[in-house]
Image 1 (cartoon, rainbow, N blue to C red):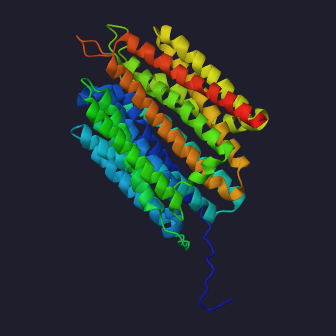
Image 2: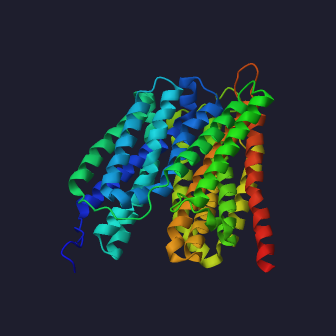
Image 3: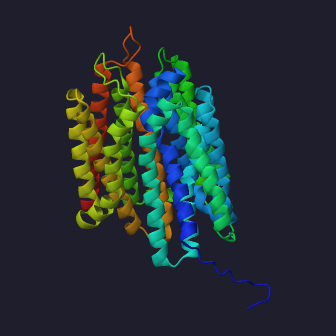
Length: 467
């Protein structure tokens, strides 16, 4: 061995380091989930429409969709610990900004910065894998994922008491303070990992173009569906901008030496079908995620339930638990029955539930049960697709394929939430300015019909497979 060459011998980490990563994941999960039960409250406090309110959660998702494919590459290039600390600094800045936000634009900026938290989990996995043997790293990764999921449930439970006892600003402030403290502990306990040399840089043009495409699309959808709408020429201009940015992104990704998202994967039938099915399922799921808290929070004087943020969190909690369980059930179901059958069953459950909810939404338990059924159905189906693709592609392509599906899930949920908000905005009572009951019924039916598109996709792909 040459004298100039050195071999990196990773330092073994202990329980305290794993615990610190787990508490950090718990804090991030809490910060990510506080918006869902509090969305009706935030819309009232900030005096914004449902479409504008949907952006509060969607901006975080959009940032996450962009960060997910590049987080691992950044960790390899600059060191996992260093990049994790950088990301947490950005998340902390976003959380503090959101906690001080006087209006919607500032809150949205805070949410954009918080969205880089999506890259924290892959980096945590990289660090654990570098510093522990394979068997022990699997246990540690399970702990981190479980605590992140638990943080999501904690955020739903504590958002209401914090917002109602103190103010909604504290929903963002307290988890952010915990993130800052835990990051300092991680810096102290976690050993450094050296960067990995690579011949290819980060695909920054792809990152910028995808960010611009998603942002232009979401903002365009909001402005088009607002009360009064936009003139046809403005709508056409927005469409041209979105198409131009998307086309530029595709062109850049096809030519990049190390693309952010390898679009050649979509040429494979299995990957293309999984991509389409995941997008359809999560779009329907995103509509449900947005519509249910809105109906819970409407005044009980009409057809709503007048639930406050605490009540909404409690009513949505069973669905969050079902969604967490679906992540483990989906992989098992895919192995036993195959992804195609799991998707069909999940689609049937979601479609039937949404169609029934369009006429049966007079009791809180009906909405809570619908949340449980749809969360379980969508979670099992998308996880089955993810597990199926992970085992169907070559080992060297697993990271590319799964990251593409994760990005698709995020975009689908964001689009679904924005579509649900657009339906509510389009059907408001002229006297109260609130969505009509028929708006929710329409939203539930549309969510069911969108889910039913999966059956058409499965049918088409089955014919292709037989051919």
